[in-house]
Amino acid sequence: MTRTIVARWQDWAGEGLQHLVLTEAPAQIVAEASVIGAEEGERVAASFRIQCDGAWRTRRLQASVLGDERRIDLTSDGEGTWHDADGRMLPDLAGAIDVDLPLTPFTNTLPIRRLSLRAGQSADLRVVYVILPAFTISVDPQRYTCLEPMRRYRYESLDSDFIREVEVDADGLVVTYPDLFRRVL
Image (cartoon, rainbow, N blue to C red; front, side, top):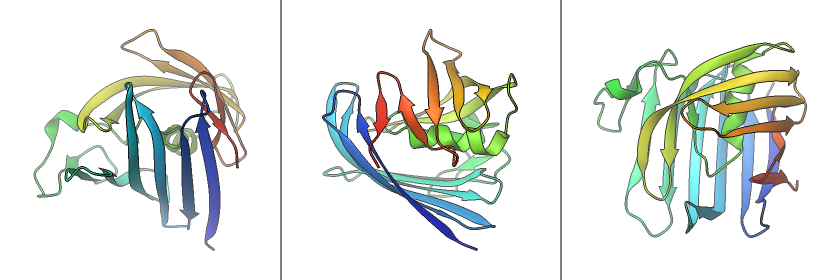
């Protein structure tokens, strides 16, 4: 059975908006979104498509910025081995299962759904961290702690002092990400 969810977020300042369509099937999950907002002080209009297997392991990330010829197209085996669009292995990304685009709160859903943490459980992760419109790709160490399953999680960046308590809905989609995003649909 296939299920489709439509979500929209506004940035905390109320200046940006994003529209996401999430299609969930037993063997594949696909998220497609358009984002109008700002990242690192730069205004941006971007789109992304994330494909996951049925266990919420990221298998492909495609991202682009309106008005820029560059594209990101990364594929993964779901076990932490990544390749670029030309099929070249990307050993610097080894071990990362999830992707994080700070431009969107959606990528928080990936580890939340994949890990199914119980109250009080934490998981340390290496994620593929993609910044648009800079098109930088790196690995970022993060921690997710379940405060209340499918309701509240603490997100921690393990290489900075950034910590937020994130509220999600029953599907693991962010409702409130303090100082960054709020759900409007």
